Image 1 (spheres, rainbow, N blue to C red):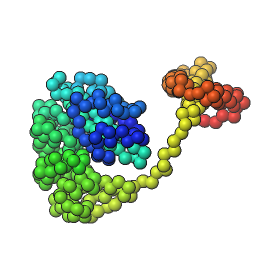
Image 2 (image 1 turned 60 degrees about the horizontal axis):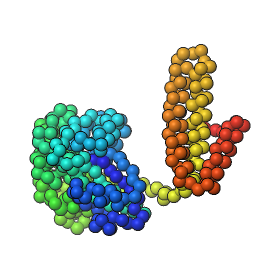
Image 3 (image 1 turned 135 degrees about the vertical axis):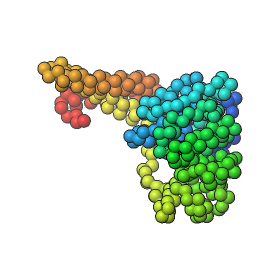
Image 4 (image 1 turned 45 degrees about the vertical axis):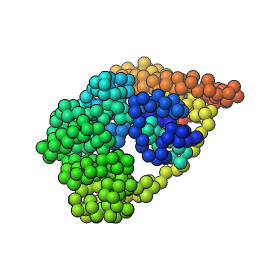
Length: 352
């Protein structure tokens, strides 16, 4: 699944009928309407389980991913992003009648809340025949996404995944996905949690909805009886982890409020750090590579020069794009900042 993210200061999501801070499922026929309603977007591979797998891989863990994409641009991008992190992939390719690659339209409001409109598409067409045991057989933990319960074929595939996990002594972890997903599949989830799940990942509203209780404490009583390890996120209050020895509370990390910057400020930083300094670094490294008689050192410096040049090329491309969006006075500021940096470099006053 691909995430399509936009900042929504005007709360456009309301005009689309979405409920703030929740997830709404949409059909393929609604994709154009939702995409065209969004402002400038950032597009990246996503999905609850895929994000977790990407995080584990980035931390040096060994992991794999079983799923389904369509033979389209989004499917290719999703495959590339996970593979580039070293994730071992077992992706089925959807038939033409099984929909496009899934995507999630994410509207971020000024209070940092995210409201989502999700098209599950091919990801929810995972079928029994798409599930192979080779990755599961080597896994210590098999992590299942709750959204997959929204269509019968995927639900049957999940049962096969869980059975494979048991056959190979792999622990089963389940993400409840969201409160509405729990409401739709409460009985299925309760059956799975009661008999098959070792680790439950959810937030406070989801687990309370699952057990139809009004407090997290009462939900924990139900989980304690089942002997399940549970991680429950609680927004600004952090997270609670239920273990065999009790509940461990993990506080939320305090972060500084994001400070908005003007376009010209970003353009100047890109020009100074990227265009000027990276270009100078590439030239310096190449000159040093040519000036040494040590072949190993020359090879290393040449590699650095190529890397610095790539950074410089990207900075110059960004510079060209930003310059078209600045006023003439701002472009003059930009040129002055670049000249000042070149003078400082010539006087030897620049430090890395």
